[in-house]
Image (cartoon, rainbow, N blue to C red; front, side, top):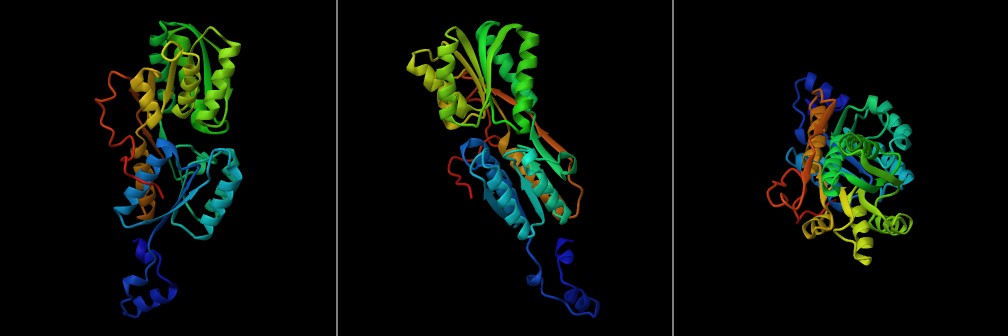
Length: 323
């Protein structure tokens, strides 16, 4: 049992001699959670899933927020600080997969199991468990929806999202490979990898409207970028005419979807991913073997089905405030 494992040698001797140590002296289990950011529906919902699952088992969670996908050095420092606290398990969503390799190998060398959550860090082959969405399927659903919206033809731009994280490549690959199969007359004329943000989506879309005045559609990795693209389209009264597909269904993404400014949203069961991260960490604490890979299915949301979906495993309650 976890409690027995954490007793000191002195207490172990006392047990051997027949003395009953107080359970209050046993160390309470601790999970450390390192996140690239805690903003937007995705990471807030992920935070909620982990913490709610741990709370049900009376397990403490130490949370570190790097503040953005461009803050790799900040996350490294935070993880180093978490390691000093000797958590039972470290759960990590990566700012940059390769950038965290060294610090996580250091954690593993100290006997701290690492669970990858959402944005998987390296070394993946040494992670105790990997909790992922089917990002290829998320891109595939976007392609199927956008192809239909475009009538199977037209020029598009691809806003990939941040470089150096696993999910962006899988999502774009799912989109482009599917589009090539089902709508070969839809042609990608421009693509760009960039940090996530509404401002970045706005700037890119403004640039693309100037360079490609006949652009017919846009793929965006997440709907902060998608909303920014729509903001640019609204300025030139092209909202709804130029089709936008995206992912995550953030509050602004949902608003624009309902208005018909975003046509397609592929979404993850984000709360469920967070819960699975917590569950696999708890399995480790309990001395059990965690599942190596847990992948949650993708879902397509459109204006037609947005009010028919159960969001319990998808996003945190509106009242939730992350910590």
